[in-house]
Image (cartoon, rainbow, N blue to C red; front, top):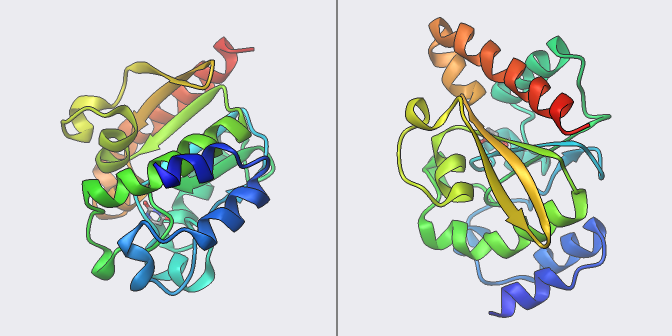
Length: 197
Ligand code: URA
């Protein structure tokens, strides 16, 4: 409840960051080095949400700067997008020890902040990177191969936002044979952005 009040009254991303720095309700903070908030544009038609910061992100305080992030940047560049017009974040703001998947308690603790972040960024389209982010944000179970490829909708405040689950770039690094599907995901994002114009 305290988290929801702290998050929902934040008037800007800067304000939200300060409130996250003061927040003591997520256990991940105790083991992480840095708060990892977002990178890219403060207001963006496209928002991408990954699972959790990894080692590189924990050291830098910036989401998706390691190998998976570098691949993500290449995928975005292929459809003409970059930090100038995309907002990139994660379902939790601190690195889970050993890069484990964040627990439901940890994602729930961060969720009010993520919801407020979405409300402040005002995206038309959200891409959820990987199964864990899709499960958290959509509140549905199931693997990424089942969830990807179809549009869903979430409501944040009074806005309905189109949401697409997509392959995570870290998965693509391990499994390059799935590049074709990843490309389809990127084209779907473009379609979603065009549709919302
Ligand atoms: N993987 C994620 O899900 N998020 C990051 O920020 C980096 C790697």
